[in-house]
Length: 512
Image (tube, rainbow, N blue to C red; front, side, top):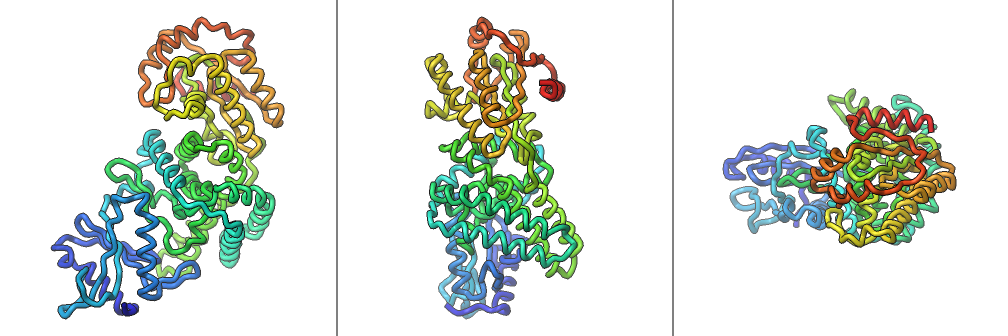
């Protein structure tokens, strides 16, 4: 293989931009700092640009070929329907050709073209529905579950080095961003405090060869389902990270765009689906740092763009300042965690209310929502939508479920996260145990009890679709006969509109 210099690439790009190369199909070209993508008909061809940066080197054909091969390897598991293979650009007697058996002068990653307006960064926020977020969380969990575990303890050194390099680049930006030095000191302090936790998570298998660039622009709806693509292939050190750091990029992206509700629901969906929830909740102590560093990296990239831009520098500078402010805000202390319990019979809307309240409680991206329906099915090894047999709802199984919920809540509170516990809590001892839990962690304890007429509860449980709850009208009738004992929780009308009910909770919890 020969080496393709800048002039050779110009000829390659001209070939790929020519509709005749693609049977006459119109061609759209998209350029990034490291690649050029040519969209034509049902196909897309991605060519690495002959560039060298501190974090990547595509300066020779051999290195670009290796990068293309790596891109196929790291992306096919997540997006087999998109990544079709490598195609050479060859020199023939008639000139350059896409494919063929002549001398290879360049390599292209061949992808199935998808609707470029369907990446999640370009969707209307209303499109980020609960079913989509549930599917997205499942895809990310599957990706992390398949990712190779890296137990080399030096990963934390690489993580710290990357953080410090980001800070150094921001500091060279001058005063335009704000108090970078103070932010850097806060990051260093957080790194020192969290080092034991990060090392322990690495030893336990939480550090893996992840996607590495998991933000909204690198997730697309393909055939109606979210697909992760364009994972980092050029730098193993950057892509090797704690799974929470990988997820944090996406959570930060949502939060920065003013989308706290999908950010919170994605995090909780990830918690619900993880096979080791206690370990994950312990790791949430590092989430503010992870979120903040992801925003700082985006600020750094924007600074680099502003320096190199011939036009649009003002826009890049504004973006850098915006991301830096997000980085500072995400690292700032979020206040003491609190415990909120929402009780009431089936159909009172506990889960709906908890999901409404969670994004606004505690530090970004909001409170951890622990739901008895989810934890009961986790204990029985069942999927969220699988129905459990009646004996899974007996006294012994319920006691185990509630114990598990309190255990997980303790992990989250210890990690500094506020928690909402969503369960019937019909027994006095179940309710008193929550007050003890909050006291043990020095957390303010708030609680509300939802109630509504039985006919409303019937209609609600019968209308449920694709929900973890197995409750039926018969269950509602059974629960109506419960003796819940003395109840000192504020009682709220579950028949109120959700927005009004949320306000009632706020009023009730400020007086309890």
